[in-house]
Length: 148
Image (cartoon, rainbow, N blue to C red; front, side, top):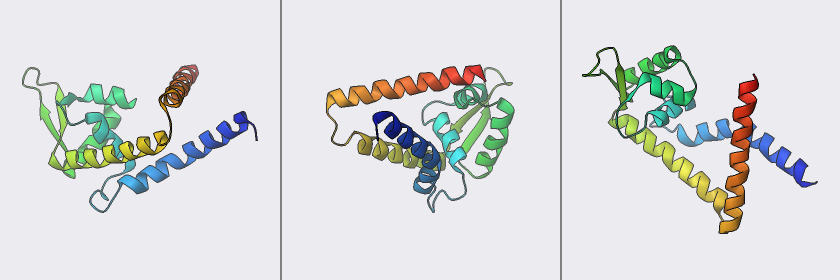
């Protein structure tokens, strides 16, 4: 099998498996009431300052309306806090609750373990090549999405 075929096989397998594997890894007993998609919303909100809905929706490439539905569920489940901005009452700010921050930390830990496993045994030059290849792949996806 040549490099092209190997890369094709690995990428196809990764894309097919990644959501299922990640969901099994991050949706534990403590976080069984949310989905993998919810966990990515929690990740987009982040642990720092409150964010407005538009900023989070843009980061996730979804509409504010779509995000609102998901946020309503996350607020009910206790993962997200929602308040109106003091400066502009039209603006809704969202932030993670204590429970949401625990979920964020759990998700982040999975990603750290994934990166460590990916880089295990690689030297600096190999790591730089991998980073370049992954950036190329991101550019491809971004450009391909613009076509559609």
